[in-house]
Amino acid sequence: MIPFHKIVCTAALLLAASAGYAQDKASGTLNFKTWSGAVKFGWMVRSPDEMDASKSILRIYLSSADIGARIRACKTLSCADRALEDGAMVDFSDARHLAYAVRLNGERVQYSGGTDGAAFKLSTNQPDHLAGKLHIDDSAAGGAKVDADFDLTLANTFKTVR
Image (cartoon, rainbow, N blue to C red; front, side):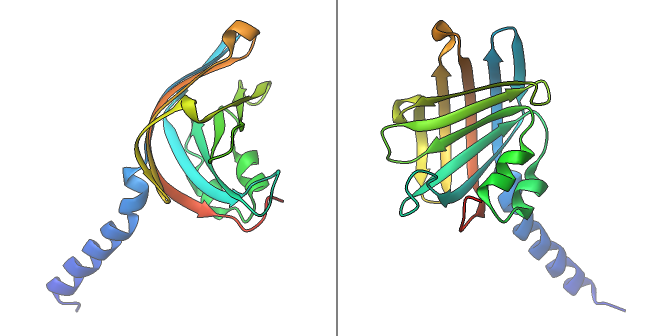
């Protein structure tokens, strides 16, 4: 029989190990023309920049569905991108142009565009932890609108884009 104190210690270690996933939060809305979606989940990954592999980016995924296990299982950035069907993905780095994409209605509706660092109002900006607000509004030009609050830690690091 296993002593009670060992069971308690094991349970505490398991809770501590999973705490990184539990703290990640995201909420908000996505709109593109007549379609809309709710942000309920969020993840952040690190990857080489698609335009300059010598630099790295953080990519934030905001989704209506829990796709975290799929993102954590991926070996490449493109694999993580394929996991998103209803939500948005937004790059964060020191680059002047930051790419983003919105996918709604099971990927039947898509829009991609660019923004800059001013879209982020961060309360936490650490290498493996971003928290704050995101606001992108390209609706006047026929594009998407993204409004989200998030508090995300690094879910995965990729060595390659594809």
